[in-house]
Image (tube, rainbow, N blue to C red; front, side, top):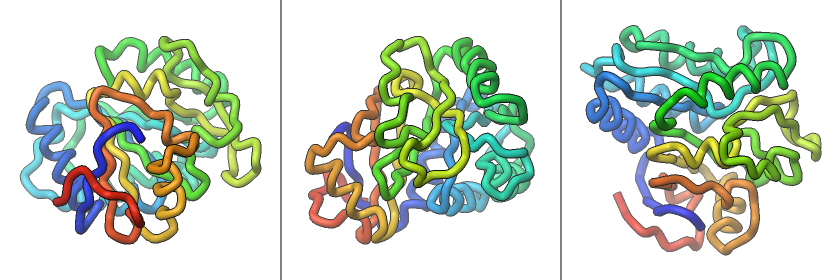
Length: 230
């Protein structure tokens, strides 16, 4: 598998520590590409609980989004706002990925936004039970995007497991991150994580970046030997 596996007691606390480090290291130009899902929500709650962090130089982006109204319970940006942005100091910029229109139109608009960035900073990714990450689903069209300059596309799950049309970073877009952080927590993630570690070609296994880190807890790590502990 690509990257370093770090076994941690608390995935959310370890992720929060990395985010604070990222903000301190780039106080005037920190870019965070955030995710959705239950583990991500726990991670952002942990980040919001960190006191004394100056968010005025932070720009918030999304790595993927469901094409639903902004106030829909399934909207990643709604979750990010309610558990993180509403509880920290004002950020430099907040950039929702989908606010209306067509998935393709939203993808094109976000592509233009992302293309202007020098890099994507820290990209946070999760791991689905089917091995997907961001909205890169098994068998979906986005897996075959080979143009390194195409960072954002519309996509959907051809297997019908994950609902809603999506907008998502591509592999080429993720590869522009300075750091990619996977957060993998709970027994339900042990099977896909172990399959990736064994070399199976699941979508999350194809992610590359300058620095790929997997934060994994004891329930999810299974038989995989970590590269780092703590």
